[in-house]
Image (cartoon, rainbow, N blue to C red):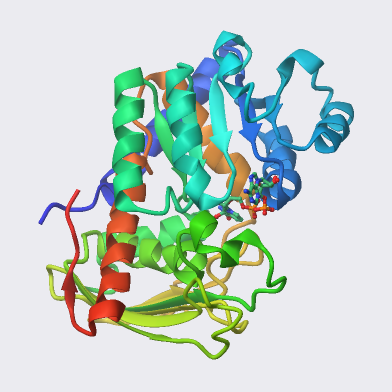
Length: 362
Ligand code: NAD
């Protein structure tokens, strides 16, 4: 089983960062980003983060709601020529100010806009989960390859220093061989009418939305791919969660023998952690996946995991821009998004069939 590219590419990302910084110093232009979907994440996180980046700027918006367009035009000084709706989106191909399309729509709409972004000849950054099925991910990867453009997936934690330090502790075996991981992420979801509870738009429930962070953490701590999963689901509110999963716990087995015990939920708050138990000690994070206030810990009092807060979105967008400017591959790529969907599909299959399921391969 191939070692995971996450860890191998930490150095590559650092190299891309310095190359990008040099390009910036040399006066290269900032990459123009077009945000597709002006919902909560775009409004509260991504647009403010774009203002903090070194290598990126908000160049255009794509929205189905004209009132939102007016608000954004005024707030960010976006000209009418750089405002699109879902029907006029393809004209973005003719806009030289747009280098990157950032897809921030409900999960099952990602494929359409990534493929249209590829056809427009732009680089594309896609929010997590990359899509609602592995087949959609495969089509997205193929479209981007055909366009010869870079595809990135929005796994912001991979650019966050506490997480990167935990990857290092695992990779360098600072506490000896990794033996066991436990991880979980969930929250109590509100509005019962939102798209996150509609299978057609979300693809799934808590697993697709936040369980994916715990899958990511397990994969980058283990540094290899899970080969088998066993999962169990419970629904305490079968009406609210009629279409999507509410609470799932599962285990994942890795080729080296590492086991992970993981959970996700839409039913309660509090789970936001991972712990890596190694032969000679333990380390972890709690909270692990929030936008701020992250805390790392180790079983050695003298070995602390403490870093100043960074804006996850600004950091990942700069890293993407730097990879593009340096002509280097970006990780997490589409293949990373696909690998998580393969794990999720195996988990859902295990629930349906009541038995252990092998994880599909890329
Ligand atoms: P949101 O509901 O706040 O926004 C969704 C946007 O899509 C809205 O602008 C809405 O108008 C638009 N839209 C277009 N067609 C729609 C339809 N048929 N139904 C519903 N909305 C439609 O959602 P969000 O929280 O901004 O999430 C968007 C994406 O970002 C999702 O894929 C989500 O998983 C991801 N996300 C990632 C993070 C992260 O930390 N990386 C955090 C939150 C959300």
